Figure (cartoon, each protein chain N blue to C red):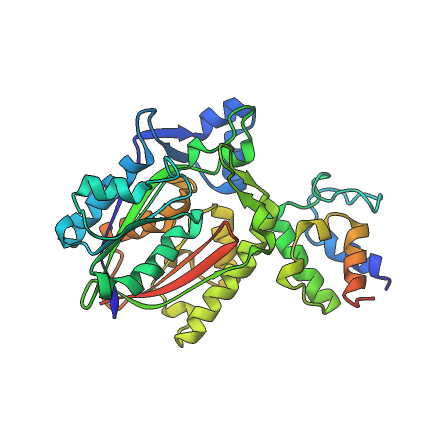
Length: 79
Length: 310
């Protein structure tokens, strides 16, 4: 499964609102996830992609949109 | 070995309800409960100062410890909302207690000040004598006023808590303390000169959950303890949803966790000391009980302590 699809699957597990089709849209502004959902979502991504998000990278801006999440995971070697 | 000889706290009379805030921000009162679990907070009166709160908590603490002010060796005032830059809250408390001649200083760390103050007092109480740690905050005075920001207006309250740290026998022995800071995301929670509180809640929640879960787990492991061997968890009372998340992640039963954030909101550095003081007054600290304290706040900074009721 492609990286984007796996991110979408993980996001669907915590999403509170329809996931935007625009990959650049903010998941916060569109009400898809809130601060506490983000905690679960990051933990889920770490498990799904077998990566560890170091504390220095733990910032909402890296998980704000589907595009940013994919870019970050790719930078961590996920595929 | 250092120990806690007493606790005290003081909360101002003013009560700010969700109904009042809901009307101000045009939201449902239950929305406020759903996002932070807070129903009321205490607010200072116009004529009250952070020093008034600190003094009342300090006096209550000295009374609980059956110690008079002339028996103090040092005073550490913990606050992120001092009434002025200097002399600080500690100087005013020292003056009001008539405890001249001993070291008195402020610790400006906001929410973790009380725990960092405890760590300092643990080291100071042998050379200097019984050390009063008093944490006081007037958080409602540093919130944005024009326009008000609902995300912070619903969270914070005013109050003060105190403890007295001594050497030797006392009701609550200090077994372990660890404090940490990491400034990578220090801008996520800040209060500038003449400014109002600015908080990036998402970053704070992400780091609070991760760092507190890790720190508590490490504290327990270092002391060969399992979660179910801890009688009481005294967390910084930041937000009920955060406390629930910590309980879930650490597998802490609700009955093990003291919670008063619903009544007082987030009183920053004072929160765990108010919780400890209330827990002691309610007779919840039973002999042999292990107590875990954990706090997180601006800096970012965080810490844990293991106490044991003797």
